[in-house]
Length: 222
Length: 229
Image (cartoon, rainbow over all chains, first blue to last red; front, side):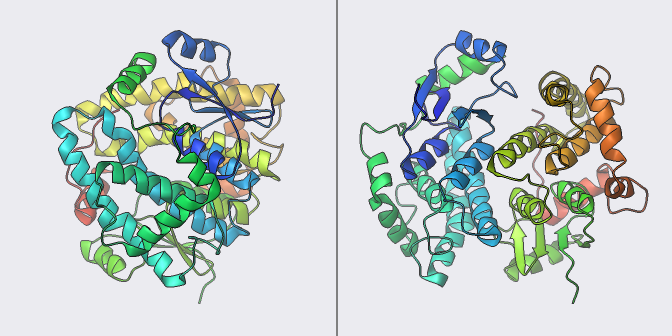
């Protein structure tokens, strides 16, 4: 029996992808248990391993953790990606929460009706370029350091690079006008653990397609 | 200059209420500035006080903090309501995550049409009684302790009490069938700081009225319809 964290989720990004990113960035190997059928999901519920009957589920250090934010906070704390003190943690939390709000729009996008998709892309572009990216552009410009918080690689950096790449998949030129973020993207992408995660064959999942959406609806729809 | 935290939000519950609960539970006095006009909000925006152009915002320890979860994390840690180690914090985060999801259904409630409110009320009660309350009932039953985590009062307890009271406002007998939670509610309500917060005249806010909804819509120019879950 390995000591590796074990992730239970669908074979796709969804709410588990930030966890994959963070573990990978920390250089932590993990196993994955993919949900493919409703029966598998119902068995998990019956076995009592899902505290609120939901995935993501991450088995780590003897705990059956649910709630994405709780899982991410634990991993960040364990692998020293959560700042050196309370104030740095406050900054990391603020940045992560903001980025999560942006990522929520991307998360929901595959499930929106076809006639709203174009409007939703516009909304994502508007929020990214008017609300979120300017904040991080400014943070990086003001302190001139390589990382968002405390001159040290943290959860906030991982979350931001994930978000940048996810938004770029929808809006390829979205970083034009954000030179600091362009440099940040390059720097983060070159960090050994992240570089490895960005290569084919890593646990990184592809963008959600119709097949993924169908699987989600099949497994979770009441 | 006061050392007290200062809360910037509307004069109502919304996303600030959990922070008021937490500060009150910790016995920390705080000031409030209520947003009533669009001009006030624009002034905050122009002043650069709102990192993502949103409230809640809390001035605390020289920071202008935004994002209710970040704010709550900071307060919980500062006032020792976040467990004694990483594993206790993990449990607290999981439990708060659950009550947060439940409160999410309640947060949008005031903005729904009358017809959707009826539907949503049923959804809230169903989620509370079939998903969330059973989980916490089991936690308390399994360890038999007074508090959810580590035999010690924490943010998780504060948040669960807040959630219980909010759901009870939608269905007063919702705790029947949950004896552990009934006892928990009585215990936590009688903690001195919480007892004080539950009394009239405290900074606890009432259920959101139509007037409150109107103010929020006007200040944020948020005139679109919210949908029931």
